[in-house]
Length: 209
Ligand code: AMP
Ligand code: ZN
Image (cartoon, rainbow, N blue to C red):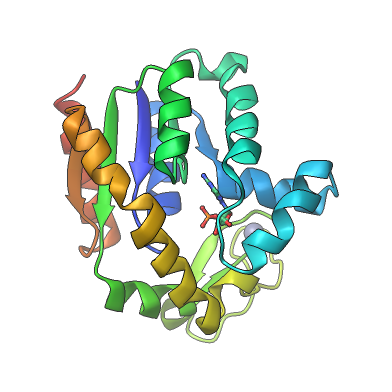
């Protein structure tokens, strides 16, 4: 199955996409992760993307669409994939519909208040990308997987978080209607605890298999 995970920043898309991908044995395609890797590797794409990302703005459609187009051609995408963080604009959704046959769009909904709380309380491992919540770390500062010292993403700083939510409402939320009209939208309540969200996603996807 070719699946899209839709939702505001901080809704838990990345965490859930990782869990579901493991369960289904398909790759997780995160444009955010690919862009951060491009920045780390100092590629042309990374150079183009960095200022937008640090400011909490969307990277231009053409850049992101090119990355996804190339990635979807890889052999491991033949049996399905989860797109995590793409598409984020109607323009991207239209480009995607030309190159891929999407079977389901999982919309993980969370209120703005809890998003601000979650995003500004998030730390990530700079090595493996694993996300952590400060309120659950109990003072721990290292990644449980590889021991790297956790950091706060530049775009999770409080002043940027509100801007990212604004960008979401303006540019990405219209995709809810877009996919609703196509009959692909599957809504999941993202305010539940992590395990319940995973269960709810598996349930809505089960209906499509
Ligand atoms: P994420 O890790 O999904 O929260 O993405 C982090 C940042 O990468 C976003 O705030 C954007 O600046 C950029 N980004 C990721 N995916 C996209 C996309 N599909 N379109 C435009 N920008 C993106
Ligand atoms: Zn790690």
